[in-house]
Length: 189
Figure 1 (cartoon, rainbow, N blue to C red):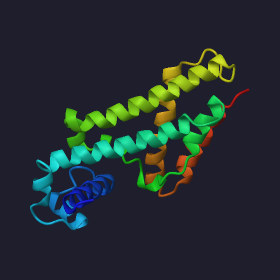
Figure 2 (cartoon, rainbow, N blue to C red):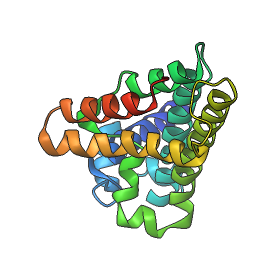
Figure 3 (cartoon, helix red, strand yellow):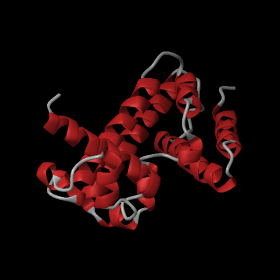
Figure 4 (cartoon, rainbow, N blue to C red):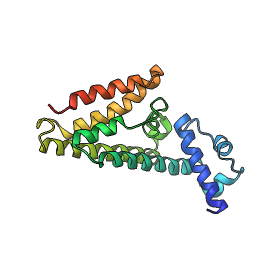
């Protein structure tokens, strides 16, 4: 990795961390440079500015979240077991979702470009879960009357809402309770 590439990588990774911790508004160019250890003009040498760097960081975060979810959801097991594995996978619950958290940032939501990777990632995960629900219905594991899209939305809402509840209470137990509740509703009969 050349010095130029390593500086660019440090800028991207520092921005990813800051976006997760502080959101877009709270992530200043100065904070990015301090976190990355990059020189004053580095950000503008590698990127057009904060929006360009943030978009690169958001895309990378979204790609990683999507790959993690796909790895679990496309893994072994019955449809229920794969959804269960997704819901129970290890997460830094009190830190929140690095992608879902961006939906609460007014500057991200107001920008079609910054919001797109967030929306696309959540849509892709939702579609994958809906396909698993359909598979479960075909195998007789889930009730035939379940709506694939609604169940997929409920799974994502449980994860995202679980983060909010855990952060509000300062305890992962609220997230865990939401997940256990949904799993008990989905459990094969």
